[in-house]
Length: 202
Image (cartoon, helix red, strand yellow):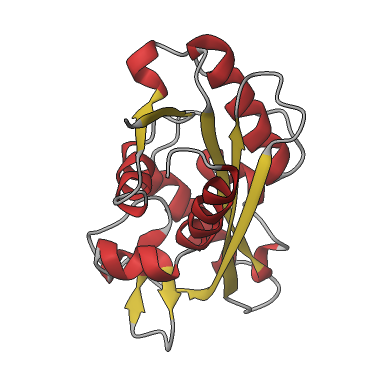
């Protein structure tokens, strides 16, 4: 019997990635929108704090175990920005294109020419709202910022994140390629192993 776990996000791209990475397990990951979970203010000062806030919030409304991730991109030439503000870098209602445009503009006028960057991801699993020992897993993916967006796949900052030898952006990778090496793929692989140890949905 499948174990139903709610994903504390309305981001369809994240849901697709998580479902692909959980393929072969007995975990049925459903979006919080299936239960009309309202958005929650991400008031944490770190990725892991925000992930915990979102996971507890989703579990409270659904009475289900919850997975939440908080992730973002850190750019050396912007002193680590956008960081935890990645999804809202150009404003609370900004589009992904708006966020990318602001990041590229910021780099064009920065005092340093460093385009080194990394994606960070913290994934949290809570058994219930008041879980005192949430499972926390982390992933980091290093790369560089491109001069212009490239590729049609992925979401967020993927079109300007150059990976490996810089020949491809994350948005030019297939879903399978990305899931093998991405920050979220790393963190979720750790989470699946932890859930196996706990005997949850595996």
